[in-house]
Image (cartoon, rainbow, N blue to C red; front, side):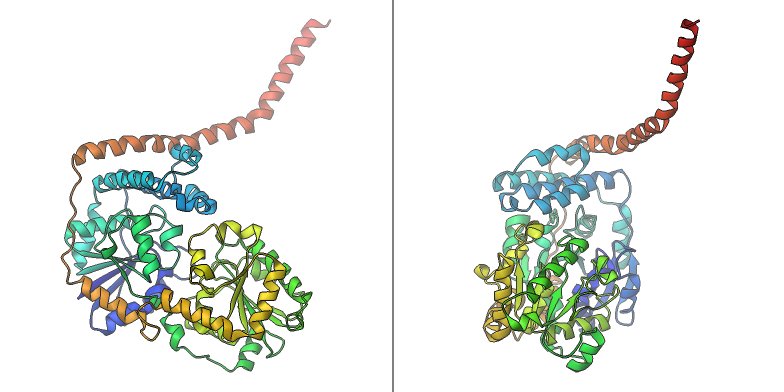
Length: 523
């Protein structure tokens, strides 16, 4: 079987490396490619080439260009914003603001004045916009690329990126009779990003909760969504430390090999770097003044998020005793050495503290207690995100969540004294959210089984919507205001800058004219 795995960018390799290796091991011909190469991300094309001995590395695929590409981008951006008018997202202003800033055309900013719509209204609007999407023609170069490589199955991840041009690849595959599978990379992708916008043959998620999200928020038939478990976490179930505890403590800069609490950083969207640093300093101050003697002297290891390292590079906690930042420089999360460091950090710590990050899930897999607290500065990216709720105890989660610093310190102290109590909660979560087919069944082989099954089903063929030429014309007309605003705005700004820059010269000229008139009037 020939499989083409198309990822939005090389950083998605860390979600699917084990699956790619398993498919290749089974004898399938696997090719991997990306839509974009982002220079600011630590994982580049060279990360893909590390797999060149097992798979075909195709690099960056043809991009969508032309008028219809611009129309599609604005249509998809509008779709992505409309989904956040759903009543479920009424307490998610940060998600709504982010999608507005990133992709909503300025001509349609008036939509942000709508507080929210009913679920039925959002669904009807989204289906109308998805019908318009079907009318947009597919770029010839994409169809030619697929025909040249002729995969039996096209896997795409994540498709839900804001205004994603990966939609064109699903549409092109359906025109070409190629089976399509969309792989949802992470636990938050179905609720904090964009809409799927098109219907592939199959969507692959982790668990039943995500199956419901795909059906409720993305309008997919539930039987077209398969839950395989979280393949990216398989390694954590079998992995062992790469060094002794004393060696790890020396390498990380901890003062001794005594107990330590691990703070795991979040992405820049969840906690902006400077705000996160300020939070950590307040948190450590609370530990040092707590009524629990074990916390007043405990070591603290801070592990920044690989994509949110900016302020941590200055070592802003260097003045605090028994606290260290590790790694001390930006790192590539896909490299084996980085993964080993991360696992050892989790394995040897006494407890984990974070704001909202997948590292909390990895800690739960290893059986470590995990604590957090609700704070005003992160309210929009904690309770204001749907995926965070999966971690809460009332939803079957494991997270010890506190409303105040004092409550958090008490919870953390309890976890250190009785780690076994927290372990029962993590076991329950792992069994339902990470490995729904059984804790002892790895997700990667199940993922591969599902892909092999996908190759046996009849692929869906694209059908043009009724009156497609008329709908195409209406879509183009609807996009004209967005084009006009986008085109006029830079020109208007240029005129404004020109007037501002010339203001002193014009004022001086007027003053000279006024002075000349006074001289003529006064003898």
